[in-house]
Image 1 (cartoon, rainbow, N blue to C red):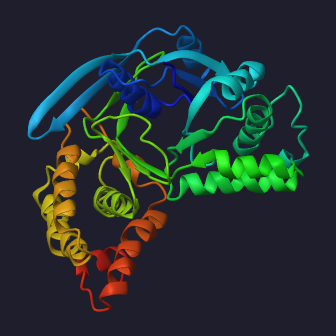
Image 2 (cartoon, rainbow, N blue to C red; image 1 turned 30 degrees about the horizontal axis):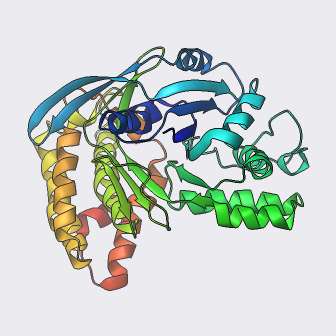
Length: 370
């Protein structure tokens, strides 16, 4: 049985996360896939990658790092992708696959991929050319599916922000209303297109050319259950009733830890190529990080009833930081530092002080200049 996935995005993250998950599930006997990959943006920047994906041959994903105290270094030949299209030049093929074959939609179109363009509402949605924006492309494809098969469809967006499924559904619904789509289509869209919020967590450190990737052992794909069967089984996939715990753990332990280290890197004016693993060889820096974790972060999570979950995630995070194969540059982490302080540190303190207005976190407060 074929349960085709259509995947919007060609990133190395998708290759080492979704594509690898599906490959592993298929090896375990799951009826899932294969995958059709779609390049959504114009230009030649990913042309070589798409050409390689079109060949439908296995590509390498190497998993390297520390897990459970042991070194992991494994190579997989991922064989879950059998088809690829460039939407700009092969739109008819994308429409045919989406309308007739796809059962699940996955996307990772970047931080700005959900932007709506001014000409999206002016597009002729019966045209044989794709519209500009991603949500407009989805509307055109959903209209084609409504006209042809009308079968339900599950969307699992993996873009890195909270409420990604609800946000994408809202964009498509608003555009359908703005462009005067029929009441029958809009009712079908509400009933048959299921958009789930998801959270993904895996550091994918390098590309392998022309396709393939290097990633850490840790992986999580948490999916908010809004009334559908599990897409497939995989040890790192969680179907959950509430995503907030997973979002908080990632934001306030992994991401906050990165920001603490980047803050020290900037204040100490260390070398431009300094890495997470290198700065953690400094006893004062690791002591500061552990004091923040043990005396401020973990007590905060404990007050929220998440003590054991937070400690497990912290231990896994420390192993990830010490990955001997990962050169994670602090200069990259330090980009948009003020916004990250707000989203990772201020948001944690706000979360704590909603429950305990007197919650003390002197080291985190010092990071904010308070």
